[in-house]
Image (tube, rainbow, N blue to C red; front, side, top):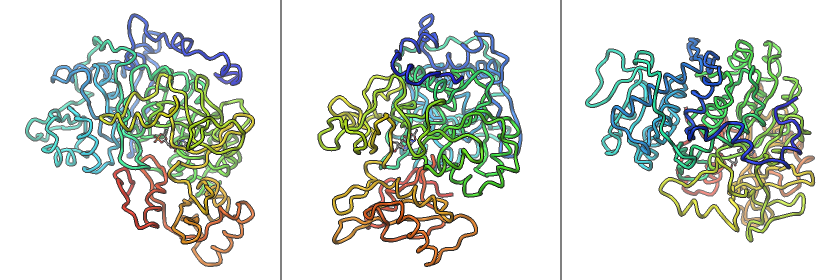
Length: 566
Ligand code: 6R9
């Protein structure tokens, strides 16, 4: 029996107060996320339970109990206090997926700071934009990334504390500080900052698929949403071994790779290594991962390598698979069911929403290609793109809209209230995505509002085209965008990356066209196919259609600081 039991019943009877009670949120006036992710689990008698099994790219393994997490995060918190960092200051964590990243995140929260996670792979320009926008006071980093920080710090006058976690014997420059987690005196008792539910907690910069990155500001009570969705959607149970593959530079890596996981007291695994199909399967096999939260890009890369690597491993520990970040093509759902014996279940949400909003739940009928239904406690509808009035007819496409009021809703965009205000229409929060809802309440994603292709006045979503393409045996990945056309305004152009063993040719192009012609309406048919080695993606694995589109239109490509280019 899953944690949620009956989805329908839970949706009907849901009350946020029940989730708060379950988490004992507000106990003794305590609202701080840092407490609920470490001290509380220890107080409940699980101090010796493993909180994190970490494996580095060299194969080195480290394990931390909940008591270790509690004590080490206290060390970070006390250190920040001692060097004069104050509650409300922004503190950036800028490092690879090393244990210190996860623990310092809680440490910052414990002393009342606002934690600003940034991808360690960011170059100095991307880093500068976000530190400058947030007026960040302190940054934790490692030698590997220190050079980037050094090169921009002169232009960041507010950033007075640069803390190096692996300084070692080599001297640091100027006023840089050294903090070696393993060598610091243990801080068993720390007076955790008395945050209120509305105290700012995490400042997350958005993925940047759509333009200049914005800092979504979250508050401590977000943990209520993250706790209950990790329990119900990810179905995390006490004896699980959980693996969230996301980097904490992306919201999935913090909401579910730190907060949701540890608030539920689970043992989680972290692999600090680049993507590699057989390494990933080895990892699942080695640690007997039971719950796996990943993303469509990764799943498509696994699919690209086929069934053989799956068969070469023992992956029978896997109990529950969930996906997020991009539309999950029906093909990927069917494939995962075939090879893992269970389908990847899709979940939909945003940096701004802080937790999962629409999802497939264990026990619910899976409709491959659908995102699932609204999470209990969430009112999700689609609205007319012009009037913002609710669309009630099943199957009609509109903008995904959410009724504000759940705990993990962002409270503003940092220094950009106007853009924040612009996201609300007629009392609804507008996500910027297009979808339809069927008669049973399932959401069917169409595309981001700005990725939708307008051909001869008809709106065509890239998702259906890409999903049709993916079903062809030669296609590993694709992106459909609009290109200018004198008659139709826009026509569809498809970019395709091929699976290993396939070569581009006009015969192959013909075969693909003939294949999708049976699946798509004539309007959605690509007028052109371009074969590419790979597609441009953000660091969180999202295809940047905006960039391909701009190329076709000869337009400025805008901010590409989140583009993955290594
Ligand atoms: C968690 C996260 C948010 C945007 C969102 C949408 C896309 C996320 C999706 C999905 C289709 C899904 N997205 N999940 N699209 N199906 N299951 O990804 O946050 O990086 O802010 O991106 O990602 O376009 O609006 P974020």
